[in-house]
Length: 406
Image (cartoon, rainbow, N blue to C red; front, side, top):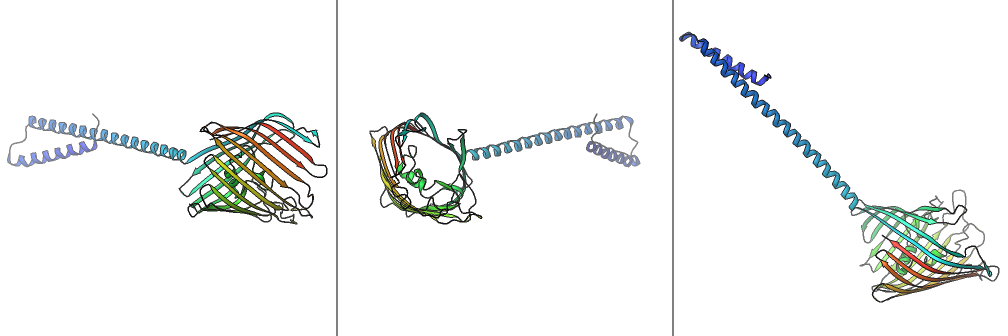
């Protein structure tokens, strides 16, 4: 039989009490008989066994309580892990957008066919983005930009187009630090609506970029009647996050007098990241922008105008100017999302150095939504760049353009 200290102590106490009683009784009564003493010992042994049984039951219940507590702790830890994963999934969004085309290009330079002519498929852009929301105020975004760039090794390049921390303190003030949308080009793209077919005017002619590294702020005021955005950036664009001697500034203000109609003006000033600690800029590049556009329901119509000074002459002794405009429109047909669209651009690219250098661009086409997130458009494009001298480059392109977004 297993010895239990508590049971032994109780039994010993009872034995001492019994002997004491027996001794006390011996003074007045006859001695306890052997049979009585044996019966008393049997009672003590039975009591000891009972105490040990109760102790064993208590130990078993303690083990059960410990096991139950461990199971509860494990279940609580698992629930917390599930909640953490669920929060991570619910607060994180993954998005993507691809621009592609299957077209035939017929390009001539001074009447002679160039190597750019031919038929093929291009994936012009593939953006993959991840946005995580920490709180209702703070979030972060990373967006990669896959771009095919013809080169000696025909390589595809991947850039970080956006990588920023955002603090949305109200609709009137949203702050971003890192690589983020600049105030002008993405704003015009939203009103134009056909970025997958062609870049907007200043982006297409390389008088601006859509994203850059720096500090950005913007917001909507007066029930979205007014909007603004301002960025202080390195100036070389998101593909080249170099450190420049000073920082460039781009800003925009907009006014929406009625639903769908937007009037906006913008400006840019800086050295485009070309002035460094060892290279001094000779001129400051500047650009002024104006847009009037209407977009509501199945209809879009608008126009963009820009002037630029010294955009390609920051480090040169000579100065130059450029200006251009773009007009666009689209209209839905029927109830299945089919739309007709067209656009016309005209630009004077060198008003001081080569006043005869001009470019004309136009496109027209039909858009066909395929399903949610996928749309196609059959388009014809024409681009003609020429001057009074040796430049006469004409490009005709026809085919199918597409956008896939999720």
